[in-house]
Image (cartoon, rainbow, N blue to C red; front, side, top):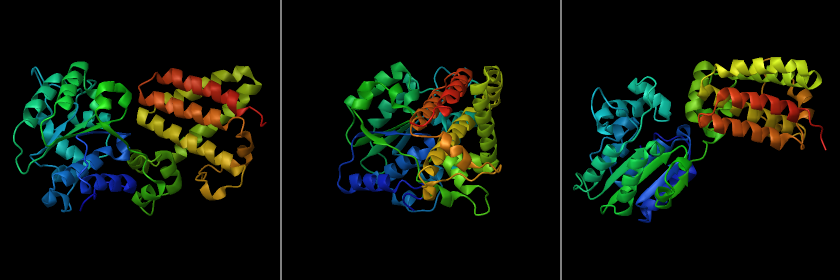
Length: 371
């Protein structure tokens, strides 16, 4: 069925449908957002609608099988095989379609793990873009239009970016490009200026909670920690790590209060950070998301806004006793601190420096009195 592989995002679906109905589909679009928000499945379903591929669009198929249309092309980051001079996406289509079937909300790292490339980083090289240029000028197979989806557009190196820019500046007729990026700041400004931007927002909590098995514990906490990211939610469900996140945070808060009274306790605070270093980056980001929601809930308790509070302790922690420490004088500072740390973690910042900075600043902020 149409949009069957897209979770939530009803507003964006309606917006994309309207573009097709009104015959106002831009020749180049840039979808911006974390992979777990669904930019890739949105782009594929949208492309099939443009191509009017009813055979694939209307059948109950997984995404990898749906998108095997000769007029739908893919560019994504890859690595060279063996001693080959260049790497091309089409050499990895079998792995790509399997990835789309199994994990369409997956991250770049998960794609690279599928390719078993070790410590190498996949890129989109100029040879890929030059080959794409040739393809897009060929006659369409099934209809009049051709579409290219570029997943991980920020993975284009500079030479590839400049070559792709020329293709956007002088595109063949009846061709459309959908770029998907986690971080548009890594793209050439001239590429961005030639695309219609579409921000893919986090998936609505009421939609995500429907994707959790009924017998799962801590459902609201899992959704809260996922921060609108379906990929993160799946990982949390498998590991059900929200209880661990709570334990880590509560331990850090206790050390922060002690460090304010006794500077000798700062060593314990630094040791607490070491326990976070060992988590993978995705787990670190999920932990930070859990913390953001925790502090928001504590702040809302002060105003008796219980109907919008997600926190349910698995460690008999009484958040109502902690709530007075989160006040109008420090809530913005605390939330901004955790959001900035999460952003820098996603940009591959130094984990040790980031979490040490977070611990020391949190000690300062959490001890600020209310105005």
